[in-house]
Image: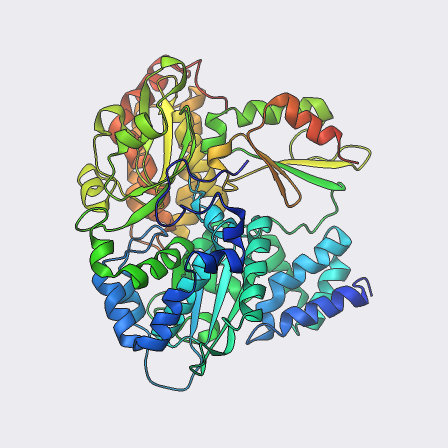
Length: 155
Length: 431
């Protein structure tokens, strides 16, 4: 078993909130990913078992949503929003400078496993552009210097 | 950082006050009095009639009459009925629901409570986009406070009225803002929109009668119950009453949120409230209502921000997300960003959309590279025509409209790329 007792209890808590068990699938996948970092084939199989689904049914849900990762990434997932309002305010330049700063391209992970860098579509911060998110935390109204400081502070 | 709106009105006037995010602070401002009035003094049908009479239109993009939508809910039968609050705010240019959750969660919950009384709904699922972790946290805290105070749960206001609120987090997919895509996602599936009919009022969440409303839509409701339909109709335009929270982004001095009456002229919002383009540059174009809505050129900004006026200029209010582009902006690059987004977010269910969004993106990128031909411009319009009104949901239309708008008003930009075989706007934003 790769899913812990605590996570399993949290999943059962989620299931109790919905009229049908499957309603808790997205919340359950969040719980498992928060614990394990990504949704491995083993974790996916265990989730499928809990929800009485075929693993492929869980996998097609995982692959549909941007926030779920089927493959391991860095300890921190950093996404720069590059949609139009952010691009108008220099988001692409910001992304390039962060790529150069980390020595990787968007979509890649630093060799020390610290950061996976990516770009993302609109995150609802259009008036505070450019911005990036580190996991669940938004950083807004950025310039290159501030953005690099944020990345450098990640352990 | 997220700031309170620069101009406020009845929705956001207390948002600077931290206490307003707590139940005690919200009650100190008269909070939950409207819900109490509705539940203890009004019949459900009277609440629906009031909201219908107020003329409140949904603020999630489609602008449908809220009261009419509520009236579609069946009044007979023992099956559970649900409300869904669409907090999957994902329309590029739109960032208003976020602050309505972060600073006004109780206001929205009060609207939900009133809607639940009116429609006889047993529970509300609030579908918050996955990336909105902090707004979801703020909302969950407010929900817990409401349960503790007996404002949710059983026997609310001593009237035997029961209602539950379940905060649900999505996982990153634009299409889940479409109401039936949202319902599929809520049920733990891929967020692929459903064929309609049946409509959600008959077959919605978990197969039960369901009404889906946007965060802002619910937030207006307590004010309408408190102040009456006539008060609400006195704000905004005759056909589009009430305030809304506009988001302004892009090339302006003061990007941010502005609560203003519907019908406020677009040029007033851009030049006075948002203080125009920095460094004395001129505006080239403005997208008035989120990225799905066709762009307006600089000469057409003297338009009241209400659908009856925007339609005359072949665009719509959408979610009120206003994106401003200055004179340096390349409209082909703009098209590249827009079409990439729709290509990336198409759920892939309908061929016209899955293939069409890819085609649009490939063609505009070819033009931007300088490899396009004159015939590509008509090809773009041809592809748009084959996507519109031919798919299960309006996503394909939303992908086609902005391209049509850009070609309608900025065809010259596209033609110049073809003629010069390169992008003629070296100072435009980077791709």
